[in-house]
Image 1 (cartoon, rainbow over the protein chains, first blue to last red):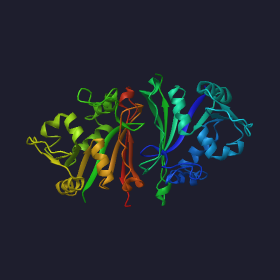
Image 2 (image 1 turned 90 degrees about the vertical axis):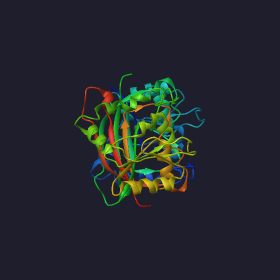
Image 3 (image 1 turned 90 degrees about the horizontal axis):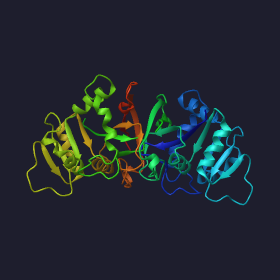
Length: 198
Length: 198
């Protein structure tokens, strides 16, 4: 059975970017701190294993904002898997690589599920994650919780006032953390939750 | 050395109450879900151990709102330890039991540290936690993360825009979760962080 898995790095206080994010500072002030753990993404150990799983997903769903800030990933996020970009307005120019623009959340989820078969579609971007949560289309959440308080910025869990997410039960199915390493910047707690049938 | 430890239960999306909290619904709509894990507070196991540690703290700092909603704990939260209530306005009536009202955050922290010696003062309430974080007076955070999304409510991490908390480094010093139990309502992940010298 297909699974749609939100995959996001956030601070302990729930931010996925620092304040004042934009084209010149995609992660906002101080936000790069969140991605230090990815320095270890190709090493053995928990962070390497978690990253390898992300790279084994068979489709990517991204918000338009994340897509733009990431420079469209050159049209190939990893292994040429389909990239579905949720957007309000489809741009005129042809999308690069495997990118397809989708305006409807349900259609986006259906396309992703069809693309991955019994595999996993990964979701990047707070906007896309929120849209899919509101639509009840999220099966799993991979949260990489970085031990820092940013105080301000863009929250992962926000704008979730629709009925569907006013009370979503989850089950923690994995918790792994980096081993003690000299650089506190590498510390991260990887949590995986699955959503329970409502 | 004394430690000031925030001790709060929150949903995975960071809420410590559901929406519309008030005297008639202290935890807001759906918020009682957060405290199901306390059903196991006197049992052996992770939740029992964590709760016993909280009850071994030597002082309590509480926000005024929490204090009022909790019915003042009858003037004794546990073991007759000092209760310091942070408030903007000291009420006219004499406080019950070991309660003392304090209007200044730094004074509150100093009183708590003096009271606990080399022990721990526990902080209850998002407002008090935020005030102490802004003042740089939090040494540890015990977060009991309940696997539920509430979508709305009162956030633990909010109103933290002061310089002091725009980038606070933490270290995860404990993570324990409840063993698999039949009732998903008992599931909780207990995290303890300590703040790193800035």
